[in-house]
Structures are given as structure tokens and as C-alpha cells.
Length: 112
Image (tube, rainbow, N blue to C red):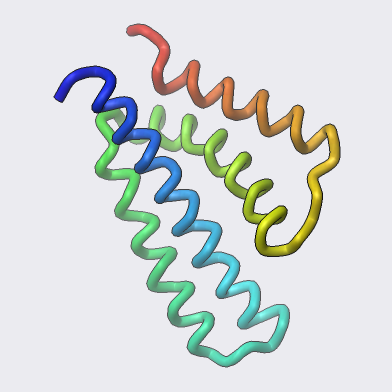
């Protein structure tokens, strides 16, 4: 696999992990906080378990993968809030998420 394909694959894995973590966590949130049926919690738990597997597919070590993932998680959480919760981010959320993503890119994709 060449460097560009590896980078595209790893970004896809980061985004998939974020979707699984946020989506699974959201279902658990609905179950507990909004008193939804237990099936929400069970499905959320299964999705969260799947989230735990996705980062193992990344082409790097645990610490680097999870440090970089933090930036992707932050921007994905902001986007989730916009789409699902209909919450428009303020300027500090936008600036902060851009800083986090820049940090993630430096951590994971910086030359070694």
C-alpha cells in the first residue's frame, strides 16, 4: 500500500471509530438520560465494543493512534451535535476543534 492510500485508509478508520464511539455513546445516553428502552443501551454497548476494535486496524502504535484519534473525535462530536442535536457550534468550538484536528494530523502524519 502506498503512502497516500495508507493515509486515506487511516483517516477513514479514524472517522469510522468516531462514528462508532459517538453513536454507541449516544444510544447509551438516550437509554439512561432519556429513559429509552434497554435495547438502546444494549445496541449502544455493542457499537462501543466495535469501536474498541477499529483503532487496532491503524498502522501505528497504541499511544499515537489514540492521541491522534482525539482530534478526530472532537471534530466529529461537533458535527454530531450539529446534525443530531441541531446545535450550532460557537466560534470557540470551531477554533478548538480545528486546533485539535491540526494536532492530530501532526501527531499521526508528521514525518518520522
